[in-house]
Length: 144
Image (cartoon, rainbow, N blue to C red; front, side, top):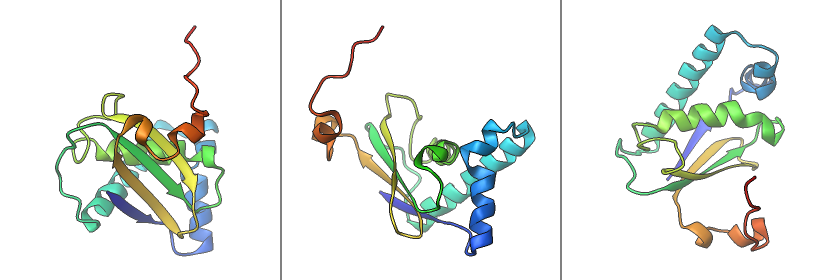
């Protein structure tokens, strides 16, 4: 499944979007009520995008991988707030939950599409694209 979320249409709008939703705003001590308003707005954007993509309100039956593609000028690690809000919006609509049973991997990547693209793909374990390239085929390090 693939859905798209548009950025604000102007350069000034996109700059304001980045300042409002980038992780740095949260590190700077954004007030709880502002964070709550942000989450509600982002949930609404994601739900509207799922409807536009004609994704039916039907829970997946197995685990998934979620890929976020960004084209907004933020550093890739600044998208945590956006990714979390969009993923949370999928709970109860597409995902039974966002825990490790249902969401096996989340990636954040860049692309030149001019908007946000989110892909929800069935989890295929080691068969997923580039799995061995990402880890070099090595096992994860042992836990302490």
